[in-house]
Amino acid sequence: MKLAELSQSNLNHQLQRGLSLQTGSFVVKIKSSIPAVARGLALLYAEYPIIEDSFADFHVTISQPSTWRRYFKPQVLFGFEGVSPFSPLPYDQAFPMLEWGMNWCVTNHAHTYLSIHAAVLEKNGRAVILAAPPGSGKSTLCAGLMMRGWRLLSDEITLVRLSDGLIEPLPRPVSLKNNSIDVIKQFAPDSVFSPVVHDTVKGTVAHLKPSSSSVTRAHDVATPAWIIFPKYVAGSATSLTSVAPSRAMMQVAENAFNYGLLGQNGFHALAKLIQSCQSYDFQYSELDQAIVLFDQLSLAVAA
Image (tube, rainbow, N blue to C red; front, top):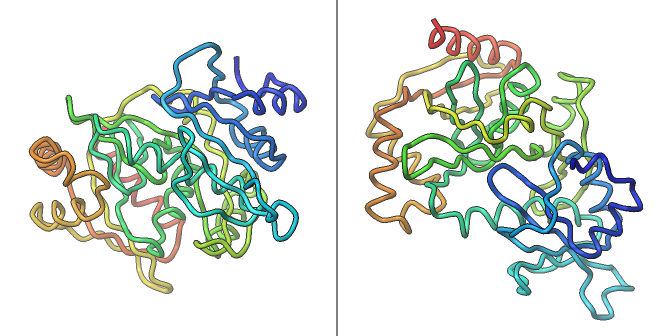
């Protein structure tokens, strides 16, 4: 059963008991009575499978603290297995907090993968990893590629399997911030966004619904082909510059969540990834031009 098959009242009821949602290879059991959580799930996760009477990888809650703050400047808490790993946030940030919390679950507990803070997409069977710090235009580029036919594997976490080096999809809504929200709304007017939330720790945020094909193919692994370090520079020409494997390895290691924790397994997984990919610095200012270049890369591999 898909989430879209539930009426809003049924969704609300199941969330109060605990709703098990399949996101890629993970099942997350979500419990909440906050309306914004139900609305966000109904809007952005309509095509995701609901798993009934099944083991869940992560049990999470979004709830209000049981203090006087329920009434004066109300807040929300993210709970994981009965523990609250984060400080409370303002009540209107309930849905973003769920998204950030689910990312935290994966990066802190899924250690059968080398997990990298990077977006990743696929076309013609090959995956491109976009690794860059906040403010580099990574998520904007990721969203633009998805809206032009690339399959989203993840906008935040690249999961490289330790067993074979393939990339495991984790397609969930794309998190966009500040000016990027309007850029993508203008670039893809039919895109579906969650309500905009202001004054978060990341600024103004909204989440973009994944493409249907990305959700449908959530169990189709991909072969890594490129590691790209993007940087948006206003007014710049679109350029792609080769990066030496040694520097690429250092930069990806710095962006990995669990590289140090995995020890020798992490080193071997990263070395194999670097060897199997072409690495580039990428600078752009025009999203359309960027997508043309990426499509040319994918066509060259397909040929």
